[in-house]
Length: 35
Image (tube, rainbow, N blue to C red; front, side, top):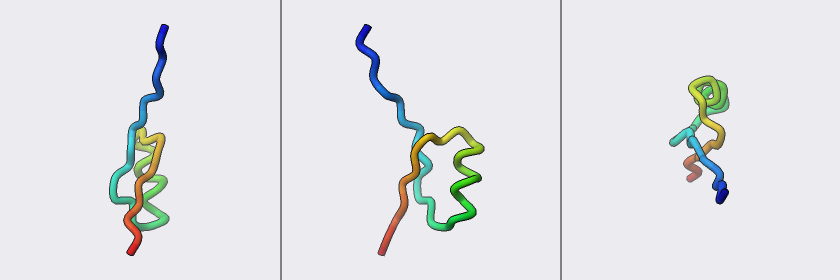
């Protein structure tokens, strides 16, 4: 079988406290906006 990874991204995580929120919602990757 050709297995591929599935990414559930937490989009626009802009504060440390949001990481736990997105992970608790099922995210297994985090995307941040840095400026």
